[in-house]
Length: 160
Image (cartoon, rainbow, N blue to C red):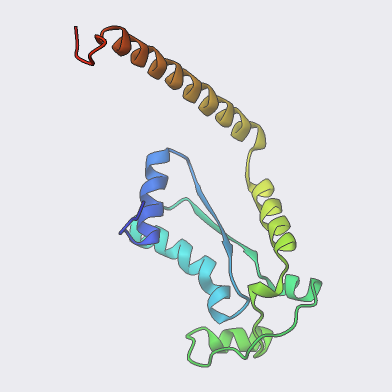
C-alpha cells in the first residue's frame, strides 16, 4: 500500500522492527556528482537523522571502475550547479555516465554479486525455511478454524 513516510524514515522504522544488528544498503545510481555522494550522504542521514549507527551503504553501481571495465559511452556533462561538481570533475572529468548504459543482465549480475558478498547465505536459507514452516502452520490453523466454524453453523447460515 501507499506509505506517506519519507523513504529513509520508512526504512529506519523497518530496520528497527526487524531486530537485525546492521543495516546494509546496496545503492545503484548514475556515475555523476550526486551519484558518487549518495552512499555517504545516505549513511550520514541514517546515523544523524534516525540514530542508526550500524548502517553500511555500499555503492554497487555505477562506479569509475565499471565505467572503464564496460567501456561505457559518456552521457551528458556534469551539472555545474551540483554541490559536488568541483570534486567530481577534478577526480573524473566532466562526463557523466548513466546507469541505463549498462545492460539489465550485467546490472542484475552486479547486484546479485553484491548481495552474495554481504549475506550469510546459510542463515538466510534457514530463515526462509522457518518462514515457510510458519506460513504452513498458520494455514493449517486457519483451515482448522474455518472447518470448526462451518460445523457449528446450521444449513441456514446461522450459529447453532
